[in-house]
Length: 288
Ligand code: G1P
Image (tube, rainbow, N blue to C red; front, side, top):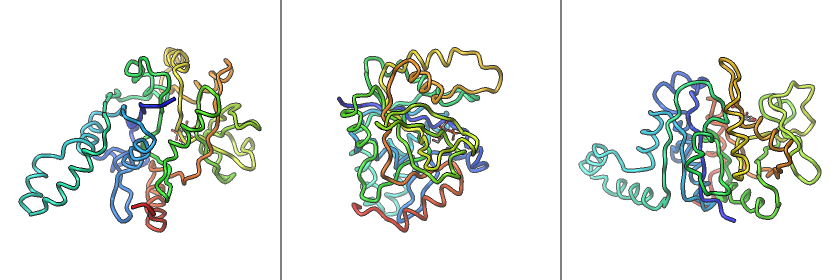
């Protein structure tokens, strides 16, 4: 089995990073270490290492142009300036990096509004026609592995051996962190029983494993996503992929939990960006 396509939702408004996000998309916020790489670069690198060939970004309009500027052709004015400044070496190195990505980039512009985490995959459904499996990966956080190996590749291997319909990634956190996330209830075989979304402290287990918005899904999920999106929730309410997953389990679909071995980095807050920058500076990649 091979997974060729990843859907990467990156249209979040980024209110916790306001006002920076009025100009720069959340996924483009840099992580500072030896170099300054946007969060999305870490996500995309993981995809490449896992054998993904096609990325579908579900993005805002400004996000689309920012992503294209970063991953596709270098802005012509910037290229001319680099040549003028005698920095053709930098320019060529960067052009080569982009050429070597061997990825097909697609963009779906998500209208502005409160729709929730089930919405981006529903917008991408048509583009996934005929594909039995795909990855759904949040684009404003990532998993860092100092040795440069791919968390996603390991999850794909697990899907091959587990015999479940889907895989969900889980991150073990301290008990006091559990209330901020979807807490995964897992059985002794490592299969997901249910996701308890942002539970009160009293319901958080001693050793919580939480959802980090990274899934390998089979096409069996589509009808359930459609059903969720067609529910009338009332004003301001959102459609959550976690509700879809819980429903899928009720209907007999199975999810193996892949507990991550890397370090989860949340780019959605300034504390998260600072923590990621410090961590990567102090624990630089050994393969670079
Ligand atoms: C979403 C999910 C939650 C997950 C979190 C981190 O919540 O609903 O289950 O733990 O992302 O990936 P959000 O942070 O969007 O409120």
